Image 1: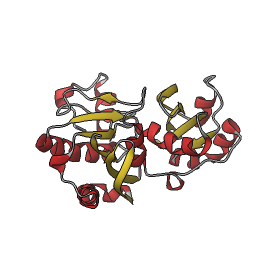
Image 2: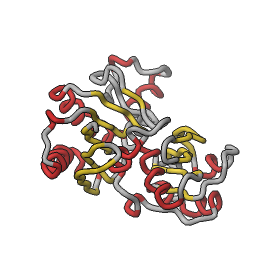
Image 3: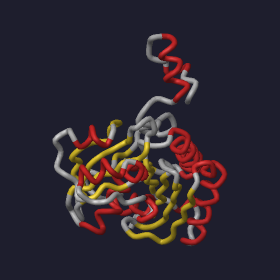
Image 4: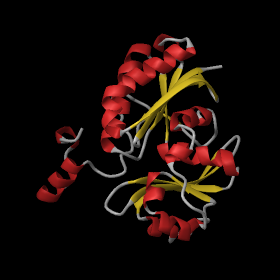
Length: 243
């Protein structure tokens, strides 16, 4: 079975896992977005060591590709880009929201589960999935909206809504789902779920040209938004100050 490293840094909780998908040999996580840059390499090294393998033994990397924290995602992707450059393996991108929803699906089974990450400004990055044992069905792809706007889009009612955005807007979540929100700290680490999803249909994609690829941030970086507002046009990619 393929030896895989999974990494997710889209939220306040950074996590890594090593295993032979879908099983986990070792994992590590830490909370506090300000610590991601200092800790992500240490977490990867720790998980590899606990699993008794090295980066050269890896056959693939599964990476949470957002949406989520702009800085957090950049840190995780930069770490994996350095690792992949050395190891020369395929990278599979899986939505970080799906990894959170899959953690809840272990409790409730293959029913609609929504994941919402806090996007500030009264909004969340939200998505709705049915996570089955062999395949994932995306009922609402990752989108930027308020919880109330997500609820108004006519998708099936979720059995649970998970994530830090769900906790922040708990009243709207209860009106949408009829159940209290579930925080990320009550779920398996998202990297563990990335491993579980790696071979599941409808979950991930091979990221082509990973050296130049970027995650799904969900919204432009603050510097980019200010530049575009000032100039009245889209920022040329080669001049992007946030990348």
